[in-house]
Amino acid sequence: MIKQLLLATTVAIATSVCAQSTSDIPTLNEMKGDFLVLNSQEYDGVTSLASMKPFTMSPNDDNTISIDGFYMNGCLAFNAEYNEKTGSISIPSGTPIFDMDTYMVYLYPWNSETEEEILRPIEYKYIGNNTWECNTDLMLVATQGDEKQTVTFSNGSRLVRCNGKSDNISYVGATGSQDEYIESRPSYITINGNSIDVYNILTADQYGYGVHLSGTLNRENGEVMFNYTLTGHANDGTYRILTGCEYDSETNMPTGMSFADTENVGKIYATINMEKGEIALNPMAIWPAEYDATTGSLSVDDTQLYEFIKSVNVSYDINSSETTAIEKPAVNDAGKEVAKIEYYAVDGSKISSPKDGTLVIKVTTYKDKATKSEKIIFN
Image (tube, rainbow, N blue to C red; front, side, top):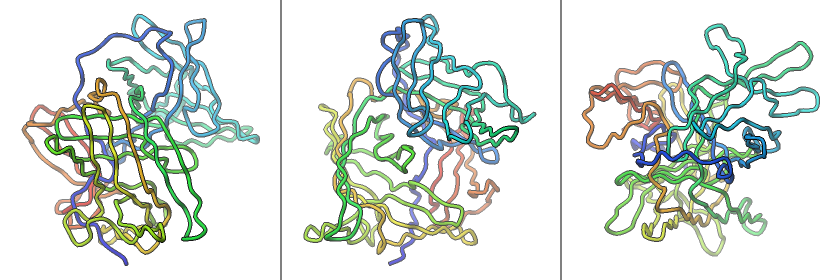
């Protein structure tokens, strides 16, 4: 059945979270473990979180760190300079990060005005709480002989140390011929008041880019309601959307989206133990969806299926779940006074009066001039 999701539910985010007041700079030897690179991209003046990718760091003996998995699965490892006094990470301009046999892919800081590479290093500055920020545009440059092709890596990027882990059991295929996947991945969890975000809870594609869930928690009863989210889309207008689901235990297959015929349709229910740092999510499914550019509506076909996620359990460090904001400027918007709210279509054009059920980018400007961008389904 084709169903329209009509709620003002965040499907790709650019929210902010509260920062802890810790600014100790990690030593070189502490620069090891699992991290996420969180890349934002600007579209017609609106910047939002575009992708996330887990990678690992490890210290070397010469004040450098080794970075592995920074771009995508199978990419080249490389070294970066680390300054123990400032905490800055310096990646050489033109660092090779993927060998495609017939051509190479390099990472450069990018001058968007002149559309050319910048030869100085890429600088990620330490801003506290195991978070590093780069405000420079970054570009992937593929070279084959004298030919070059460019793809935007980010219009602003952050590195964060993972503070949690998510485990899931998923199934692909029909009853009787299902492939089972038991997976575990490093995750990044933030809690700000009654808002909770989990980054890299699943893998969105074969390249290793992650899925983000944002939701609201009830501290009194230990319940969370996560919003459904997009996991990918194509130029032909088709999308993949992750929602909560009901399922048949005998066939081990989803029967439709969760909370059907209610205002919470498609949302993902979870329980949380904030003393232990544990989250258990109800079953989810990834369905095909179509976006109508004329009406701006997103319709989910819950009779078709990409993947059934039967269980997801997240464990996290309760002492590091409040971290710095992903978007800049950093905004703790709880109780802040709103100056104006504007809406944009996904192609970047401004919308004066969005229609219910349309996929839009909402930009909130506060009276202190801070802004927050989020992609929502308008209601």
